[in-house]
Structure formats: C-alpha cells, structure tokens
Length: 214
Image 1: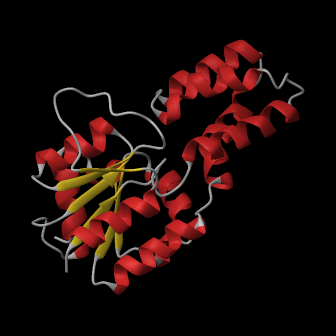
Image 2: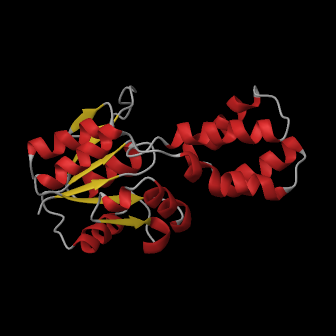
C-alpha cells in the first residue's frame, strides 16, 4: 500500500487559529486587553518558539502566576483545534484508494495525541509518530522511517505533505520522496530546493498525492 506521510499542525489542523482562540480566551479571563493578541501570536511563532521561552515572557509581561500560563500552553491549542470536513473527506478518500495515511509530527506526545484523538484523526489514519516518542525531529530521515515502520509500509513511493519548507519538504528530499507543500496562500521562499507540488490546503494536497500515485 502506498504511503502518505502527513504533517499535523497547520496542515491537517489549523494550529494557529486554535492558538489565537485559546489566547483570546486567556486574555479575557485575566482582564487583559485584546490588543495583546498580536503580541502573543508573534511570540508563539506558530509553536516554533520554545515553550519555556513563551511561558517566561508571558509571566514577566503580565505579572501572572505560572499555572494559568502553563494551562494555556499545555492545553489551549488541543482544546480548540478542529478538523475540517474537507480534510476528513480527503483522508477517507485516500484510504478508499488504497493509501496508508500516517501522521508525522514534531512536538510532545501528550499534546499531539490529544489533538489527534480529539479531532477524530485517530480513526482516519493508520498510525502516527511524534518526535518526542521516537527521539528524532523532522526533517531527520529517522522519523519518517519510524512512521513507515509504524504502518508496516515501505518508504519507497511515499508522498510527504506539510506546511513547513524545512521540516516537511526538506524531510521529503532527505528520504527521496515526493512532496506537496501546503502553502496556505504563501509564496515559496526557498531558493535551494522546491516541493514536487504546491496546494493551498491539506485536503487538496492529499488529493494531489493520491491522484499522482506512488
């Protein structure tokens, strides 16, 4: 069975929208101005800023106890993340066409698995791997091999789908796989390498991989 290796955050689910919703609730709960949302979003940097750095900056800026800040960072995104009907249908269609679908995500196991189970992705994919569990982060080839092993499928002929040029598209190049970059309306900015295909969203990207075949 051919293999689709699919990123989670800002690919299968809109992680940034979930963070903004959680952060808006945090600001309201603590009587902080809504104008702080842009600062929080910039600080978070789509989850790429280390969690400890985000927590420290928030505690210093808002003079709050650490506990509510930790709750936001540990649980906020997972509580608000959703799966679109279009993405759900694309995954169902990929499986119906004989593809093995595996989520490959950087992050912490507890947080990422909560997103996967909470959105029902656990019932739509064959397996998932989280960097914390396997000891390797994308774009390292080892995490993609772990994903293939988890699904009992070969890497040969795989497609990698994701929104990150570095983690996902460079990762695909490292395992000699084809790739679809989920652009979200952005322009490709890397001069040294390119994805095989570009799609605006995960649902379209999944259909591209399935249509073009292994």
